[in-house]
Length: 341
Image 1: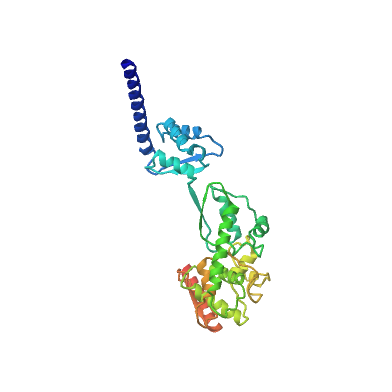
Image 2: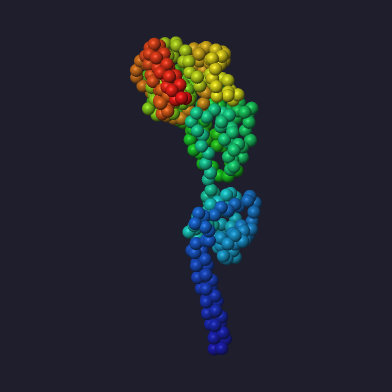
């Protein structure tokens, strides 16, 4: 009987020792950082791939040293069946247990796309199609259907997407990013409209976007946006034509060659504010929130005109009378001529 008990005891000791060694080995593996460069490493899990393939790929790249232990731990925790496809960035210092949690939670690498203030729809489409991580398929002919899907009141895209930086995982569709930008613009214009100054000659939030888009194209200077908005709003109130070049340029379309001619100012289009009173029918660009705010909170004053100074700082000279404006224009032209010599 004693020899049997001794054998059983020896077996139990061996089992306990083996388990202890295994636990220690597993614990050491799970808490030792994976091997990646200082900048980290990118790793993609394709849709439908098995966890065994994932662990083998990690081992092949030298990121983990013991794929068997990685698989065993993943199966024991139940995470082997919950990993999510996507593009991951593995940071230096990440442990195998943290890496598994990253895969299971779907904490994929996010990329960014920025809509720039003043872009028109052609600029926006080109940028979407150039982005390497976006699945871009939208064409200029698709805008009406897309905007109807979003619930927009217009089929015209300018003014409907807020200039901002948007984050997304790889292979996101361009439509998904645009929906984010559309929803954010709806939120911003609603807030800005609710807090607008009283007695403005703009009747709807959409008209505010039209005016804001013109302000956006006229200046990039924060200090001048409310001043320029004030000029346009006073001209609207007096039924004066806005006479702003960016609307004419937009009416010409993507074929504009950069040279605005007298005949362009005289050619009547829905966007020619030299030939037509009031606001153009739609925004001409994507206005940022600062321009929207300026359009709804214009600066006080009596100026009805402005022209670039030509000083190279983007500034403008504001005038109350046509005579003052003509003098400012002459000064600007003289400065341009002197700069050419």
